[in-house]
Amino acid sequence: TFGACGAVTGVKNPVLLARHICDQQRVPLSLGRIPPCLLAGEGAHRYAIEHNIATVAPDSLISDKAIRTFKHCMKRFNRHQEHEDKRMKYNTGFTSELQKQMDTVGAVCVDTKGNIAVACSSGGVLLKRSGRIGQAAMQGAGCWADSTVGVVSTGCGEHLMATCLAREAARNIHASDCPTSALHSTFVDGFLGSPLLSNVEEKLAGLLVIQVKGGRGEMLYAHTTDSMCIGYMATNNKKPKSRMSRLPAGSKHGFSLTLEGVSF
Amino acid sequence: TFGACGAVTGVKNPVLLARHICDQQRVPLSLGRIPPCLLAGEGAHRYAIEHNIATVAPDSLISDKAIRTFKHCMKRFNRHQEHEDKRMKYNTGFTSELQKQMDTVGAVCVDTKGNIAVACSSGGVLLKRSGRIGQAAMQGAGCWADSTVGVVSTGCGEHLMATCLAREAARNIHASDCPTSALHSTFVDGFLGSPLLSNVEEKLAGLLVIQVKGGRGEMLYAHTTDSMCIGYMATNNKKPKSRMSRLPAGSKHGFSLTLEGVSF
Image (cartoon, each protein chain N blue to C red):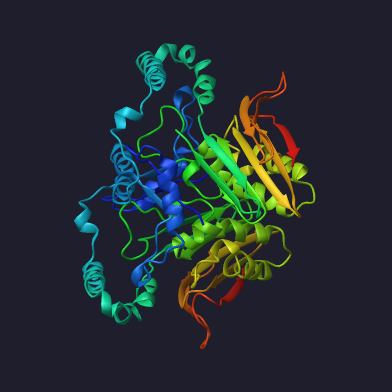
């Protein structure tokens, strides 16, 4: 089952609200009413209160760092709006600065019975419009889980939604004997080369994938962003391993990809 | 490109707001800001006002019929809540009554150059929670369009979102020589038999599909709902043709399907 929330303020851990909505998909409502799988805005906030999911003053969720980043961006933005003649100057460099600040967190796991669960949460893109819902709230874009494959994504939400990238990766992995080459072709054909993104210059995505098949598993990740931070651990590990994956020197983000995998 | 809005009140034609959001995907914003592809709630309403998309008093969008249906449902619902002992009595029959009232409208079209466009709009399920976003706002669930296939869906939004059914149909049609059997297997394997809906008794969906390949086209539709109303016309037709497609007598909605197609 799938559950999500978006464009909601004042919920301490939106992923717990999403989890509650997801779990309720299995609980039939009276009179054949359908439990929602995606709630947004004020309605999502009310749902959280009714179901005892922690809500807080929205201000308390804003870190000092986020305020600094926001003020910095707004200053650049206002300067850019005011000085039409010097726009190019202010535009240069800032684009990639904006797109670097992506903060999606995703998790994929499998239990000893082979059940796969995934979750993700994201602050979204910088200087976004109020009411924007991103890929994290969209089944098939931000995440996908079925009986053998789990996928979470990061990157530019709009690119991930246009291509349903998490679902695409899962389907390609199902259809292939080699999850590595299936993930590679997902990026090459289903993302970097997708006609659905023909108007986008820099195509930004990262995927974290688990496949479980015949008692063995593969953990894979790939990204077209400059970097992607990965952590993983198995039941028999004492500590999680982590690493910062980066595009090879000379590769340009949004145009090329790097891919790695670990068997378990 | 894809654009959508959800959980928004007071917008006269939400599909025009979705269209505007979709079109803006092709217009780069300054400073590398990303135009949103899904807007919800108050933010969506503000976007409509800023972009001169007609807004009206929310009350003016409520038809007399909708008020009657709502009052009838709330009466049943309240009676059901009050009389715990007689719940079964009130539950019986009402479930299918609720689920019959689906009002999604979808359109798929192809121009003389082979460009495919799709759109859909939906009032959602009855007695839904405030803030619910349905399949119509979700790429891959409510609609899909690429260079050769266009799909729109109707049915129970939560079932369509869980299975990304529109995307699924497009992929199966791409991978097959026969769009009819591809659409059939989408329903049998990807919906009625999907492990993702194992907890759902009655699985409700309808798909309307166009495929264009080598100058020829197929229009196909299939549904597990009791009925689905279809209208179609080609440039050389004077009037659209329409028909009400129904499940064969003896078939149970949510468990079986009917499928038909027209070549053009």
